[in-house]
Length: 325
Image (tube, rainbow, N blue to C red):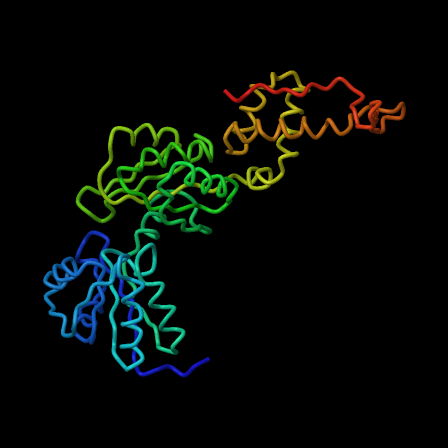
């Protein structure tokens, strides 16, 4: 590991709403840094005025559009011994904000990296959500395109940890509806809006209900917290055969397949489409052989062969299953 170079990179948290939440050390760092790299220089100057401090060093922009190019410049300054302060519009740099590239470049050059801890929308939303916080994962912003968003959510459907997302207000309704489709409409969630600001609001409820509420229009900075999959869903979500067996057990007890699929979906916190797909897959698998019972109660599988040598099925199992309601 290289010895630390003379410079130092400081990541500083900034208020997510209430200016007085700024960490006391932030003003001192603004006054001491040789270079202040800010996501929005205008907002940085407004914050500095509110904190009654004037940045002593050079102020440069560092945002998504110039992050790659400016990283090389700032890394060079760090290598030459500069103290560089990195701030973003709200919260901690690198967390769904610019910063990762510069931290990686500093580490590669053996430059010391430290932080001024500050407010975090992720942790604040988690604490206010009323959902389990002992284990969680941060997912950032969902993809903007519907297909990519749906695919990302399907990947997380069986995740047992509490999930945290950022979302733009104009995409909130569509994202909540997609979450309800992927996770099940009954999955608990909380939409945290304008945290620490005058119009702070935390709306809690099932995803389907929240999606309906959001269709009326929502403004402000949004953080969405979603409960993890129930214990059964985490296991059954990857065990499609287990889901199909649960449906089959309910059918054997006299429940119609459509209702059985709905009941299993509610129990495991997954969409009915997932359960339906598992049932269809199990039915297709059964074509490779059907199960009967010997006189002593043991299961045995019989298959027949057609005249052209292909396998056929000895049994009268149906292949269709009604679509989800």
